[in-house]
Image 1 (cartoon, one colour):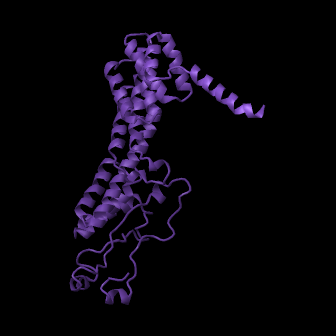
Image 2 (cartoon, one colour; image 1 turned 60 degrees about the vertical axis):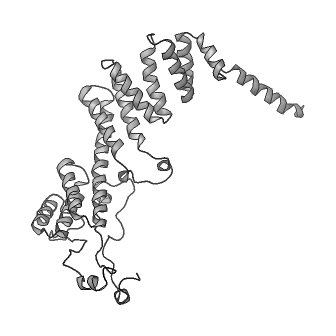
Image 3 (cartoon, rainbow, N blue to C red; image 1 turned 45 degrees about the horizontal axis):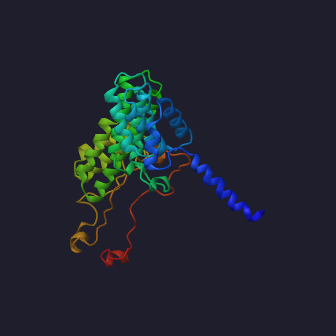
Length: 325
């Protein structure tokens, strides 16, 4: 009897598969030709409940093709946006949402289309590795984040009483923080390249456009540092003054409110050594500002054990013109 068990199991599995709807391409189309709207609706509901997103998408598209003006056509269009989103096909989800909004701008559930569009735009920027590795999302291309911010803004502006408006506002606040922090990352990159004016402009952009975000104190520090490196001490002092008045506990400020610059201006440091070594030895280090641990900490995040600071130069490094570190 035991020897028959695998055969019986295989027979049961084959029988179960034959009972499933829509087996092959041509057979599927033939079977769909005889389906009513109600048949499609029941089948699609089973697909969605079973998380069979690809099947749901296919059946929703078939329903709309066969019954474009039917009683369930508009609901099918909304369900299609949802199915695309759950299937991680964000591009088609956004396109389907745009189509619904264009065709039904006054539909009672158009807010749902806006909401799913924003979620899809937000998810679109997440890479495959982002789900498995600790990736800093503030360093990614912010294009999708900006689009999501705009979509949620439309939802709140056009439909402020929507049940999705409250969550949209929370997401906009989070996105605003991310966009501001991205500008600081770019400023730090400009510091590393020696593009101090570009760094100052990024800091000023954050101060002018992202007031109230946790990136503002770093933006002021970036401005102070960049203007100092450019030799514009009056502008650097203005930035330090604003920073000390609003964020007196900023890590780069001492007890007297004086700013501890990280970089070295062109006329400071061992300039003679840089010239003598034809640039092979440079005692300047690129400034870097990131105080999220203090003003916008993640759960469990702690202050770094040692602050970022200049490395001490040994006599050996100087004698070897910086070739050995």
